[in-house]
Image (cartoon, rainbow, N blue to C red; front, side, top):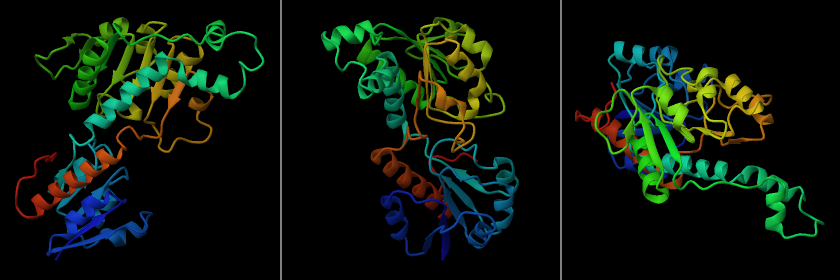
Length: 321
């Protein structure tokens, strides 16, 4: 029997897929805290992980480990160097959450453009109550005038699967002009810029779709934010470390940009005193851009299939290392 350990719960469809295999023993971690996790991983051939860290200590403790399945696209929570040295394969699910994250990013564009955060708060606080005028007139009077996405300029940094899907939606649905910066991409159906500074300068919306690496950490800082238009918005659904959070707070508070949307954080969960929480022109979501019923089911099945393929001697479709 080959043992597969699931760090955090995944969609039941994935677990059922594992249980269909007669030579696979499946278990879900009851406790992922140290040192309990060392006991859990000691005899397993495979682990499936979502956002938990898989560091060198865990890989050293997992003496029989053959393959790590990453339930998601990014592998920055896995010590890839140690995994490679120990000949441990890593598989992921880079296509399962494309639609969900892309839709989330577009939702952010709409919320920011239509001042939905501020409008919702104003209505709930009774700002318009008791006024003798039409509600639409009052919305205009108090500055709740939004803008359309139609014809605006979208800048996409990172033109992978998700970036391309965002571009497709925005071009077809809103006839937006789309710029993209990605030094690793050739011919595409959007305008590629050679210098990222041009994208920050021209775009009305800047959407980040980058992996977190040593090269992309802190990719957006004070300098890049100051290149943006005063009326522009920044959206980050990739990884928290890509944006300098202090620089973003400063830019929002000083009106350097009009607003932002953040789904990911440098520290997750963010601390209770995080300065983001005081920014009124900032949409915050709990790293759930990819968390839809549809995407979770696809990710669970894809990661399980990748793990099973490796354990059975087949080449997985999504083999990272």
